[in-house]
Length: 262
Image 1 (tube, helix red, strand yellow):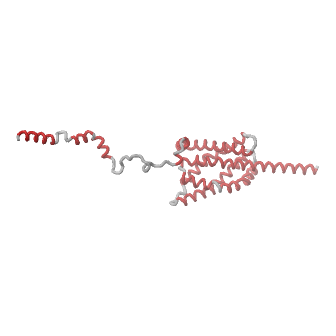
Image 2 (cartoon, helix red, strand yellow):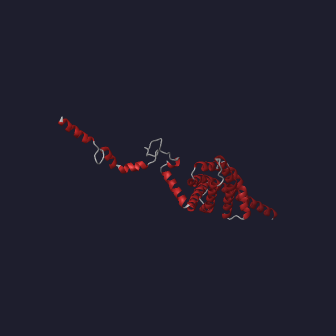
Image 3 (tube, rainbow, N blue to C red):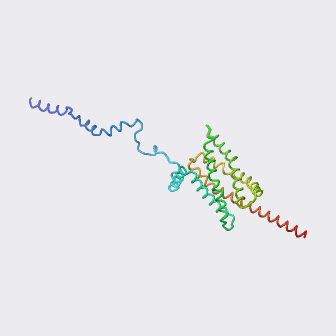
């Protein structure tokens, strides 16, 4: 019996909790720092394993590799130096548009025409940028459709005729025409360009204000503007040729009259 009591006493001592706590408790104390951090995480905010259901989808323009990096670099430049970025962008757009228009005309390259286009683009860069910033910050109503419609209408009625008048007027003025000839150039080209702009820019404006973030709107519109400036430059060239032909016809008629009288 004594032997049985000794064995039972050892087993009971083994089962008693020690001064440092049970093995499980000591394990918890040894990892107390981790448990404290885990205790601070609110319920429902535990770290999730990234799977298809909980990973946010990146916008399309951020998944284009080198193009995405170039767009992000442009956006950073736009945020840090907006005026300088707009000036450089405008010069690139007008340069490409002028080269394209001169290539369409089939004539030899004229560097003077390019310099004239770059001057027009440099002057208009900052005012055009300020206009679209103003347009994005105003006419914002509870209905997105109403806001978009008002922005498109205001841009088409206010900005387009003013800009087109400036473009064609400056083309004539820098070419050496006098004020009556400048007005004649505006009268011949602005109505046609305004009607044709209705086929393009309302859709571009609506798409830009709906899907394109603010910092990317300039570069998006810039790609469209290369084609549009090509058209305006070509239209201006056609008007120049018509005016030159009219002047030649007038001169020939005057010479015929002078020879007849003589």
